Length: 259
View 1: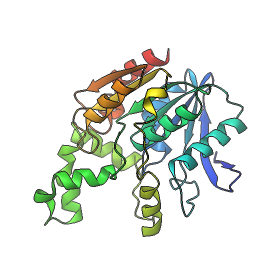
View 2: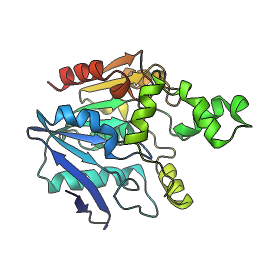
View 3: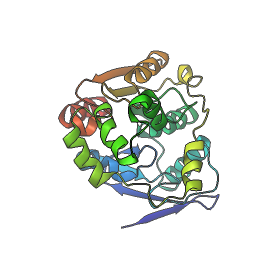
């Protein structure tokens, strides 16, 4: 069933709730939607109430003309209030981890624990652009299709497994207009996540994939050192999708943290 929540700013947010128990909020990354968390939802819904959200500008949610990180946070706060949720865990992937961090910073009594998957501490550049910059000499004369194929080995450890998952669970942004794409990228520009970290006392688990060439694992490691109550886990057989590439290990680490 399709659930839409209308914020006080008249932005329609698509969400789903599945399962019963303590709430767990799932926040996907940029140019993804809630379906990226399908492997987690199947397991978590057996024990928890899982709230998956299409962030504004993604999936079936509205795309406002202009957005910032605080707008994503406000959408989630309003939705959780409407669902009568006053305590929850939050799990964020990549730039979804940025939103999870901001949400926790602003709502320390609401978020009981946060899990950050491949988080970035640098919002001066868009993460997807970094991998192109690092390999500019190799890919500059390639077609777009050739570039994407070449860069797979710098994004995932298990390329075959990751490709299959991406094809079925991560949408293309082919239907987005140039303006909509720019709006999403600009929404994270220069967000100062570093200054927030020392004040977040919430119990935190950071998981980074060793083979992620887009957001380096050292970024997650640095964040864990600045957060007063954080544990850092490096997944050595993973890249951008540790919950897919090392699914059993990921679920074990995650459930131990949540339990």
